[in-house]
Image 1 (cartoon, rainbow, N blue to C red):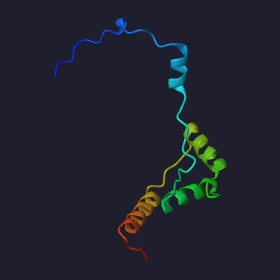
Image 2: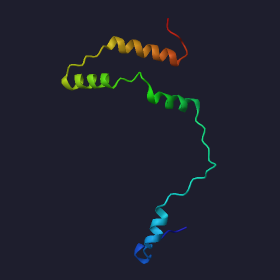
Image 3: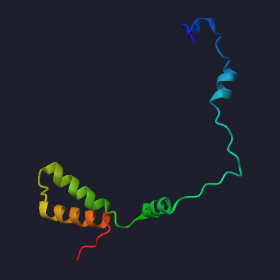
Length: 93
């Protein structure tokens, strides 16, 4: 199959009503239903998670900007090990 050059100048421009109709989204079926997985429900519930502290995030960001933020590599390593053990199904004691 050979595809030749597209000659756009030979095509008539669509009327304004045709362009407007093409831009309108199709109406959704009123009977369409969606079920969220348990993981998605958990994420939805986490939206209002009080564990997020915006003020703490801002303090850390300001410390980074000021060059005063220090990293504790031992704490990071310990948490990475615990996380890896949890992912592998092993509990740390």
